Image 1 (spheres, protein in one colour):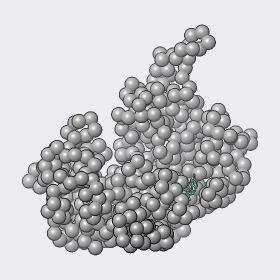
Image 2 (image 1 turned 180 degrees about the horizontal axis):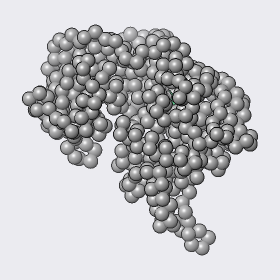
Image 3 (image 1 turned 135 degrees about the vertical axis):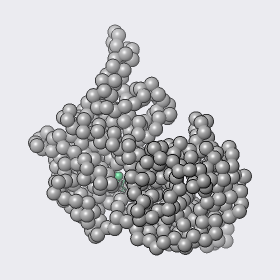
Image 4 (image 1 turned 120 degrees about the vertical axis):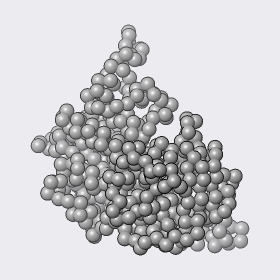
Length: 514
Ligand SMILES: Nc1ncnc2c1ncn2[C@@H]1O[C@H](COP(=O)(O)OP(=O)(O)OP(=O)(O)O)[C@@H](O)[C@H]1O
Ligand SMILES: [Mg+2]
């Protein structure tokens, strides 16, 4: 296959002094699916932002179709036929799907092209939808559609602008397994129509499944480029991390003690006012992990929000150490030694305009340890933040770095560090390792189990079935707002078995799930 893109010896030092790329070479062939992998902060997004003209390289060259190119902004890159779907979506929530796709590039009609040609707009977009199997509801407002569809909108947007080389930055991090399958079908359709794909992911299973070649970055440098068919997950992870990585946490059997959380007949509504939880009941004891499996959108979000006070339940009861949480305020709940790692760290997990230290300290400011008289003890805070960053391997310039400048996975580590450090009696974690690299997944899993062994009751929600299976002592399957199965996580329990419950094909008798 002919060479389409050649990035040579790329260096990037950000204004705050972080050297994100320190000599990266990347060669992409026309028509291939090229996976770009590496630990959190290895420099993947930075390299792609440089390619797409969003960041200028400090040094290095880019050749596209045999010609040297210099991009002064995304407009230049788009004009050459590149498109990028970012790690965090950039759509206008109040506009419709179709309006988002054509935004800034609307077809015009009439004398002097004064009017927007809506008919043409729909025709063109519908043609793209049909060609690539990217099913979306063109007339729906973006704020009302699920993430899987939002992502298709981002891809359609890029295609509408005529992109040939498409960069997908962690496209599957937010997708359910079903949505991932659909995305992969669309990627195959794109390739067979002559597109080239650069694909960033932390999921090595996906790398093996979809890519033709793989480039591995470590600490800002390109370490190797491999043919997918000649390698395996173990080799890739060793090259990424620089050591062997365990794919499963080893843990002792749980020793459950007193009930910490007791939920009875819990009912809650979703954002649209529809019944999201149909009266569910379960207990979690000190020293055990209860995992909630299920296809996203079956009540997981509402369950976690109801327990943490972010959503008012409409029926039932939630007893935490014997106290009713339904009548407590969010602030009360935050001071009850309940840790919560929310699913969406961008909007509710962290303050992007605050420093890492401020984010880590969020709930500790009242703690006398960090005070000197009436004032905050700056030195203590600095020491504490540095210690936490070291422990949780948060890779950043210093504790004064703004959270907004962190790579996706490092931001997640900050949130996890803050919540675990409360020494919670109840720990609620949603998608704890979304966007986190394999080395850090291993670490976060071990930390969660450590809290369990220290006597915390742990509730885990994850779209990754493998994560649920590796962390949980018991597994509840949510389907359509009901617990349809409550299973002991024994060695003979399979993903397939859980899958039947997740898809609503099987259901346990009501007595069993109580
Ligand atoms: N705007 C910025 N200003 C300063 N430093 C930055 C900025 N963006 C990223 N960095 C730093 O550059 C390094 C590389 O970040 P980058 O986002 O490229 O990593 P990544 O490989 O995409 O990681 P992840 O898998 O976590 O998304 C990190 O240390 C990050 O903190
Ligand atoms: Mg990234």
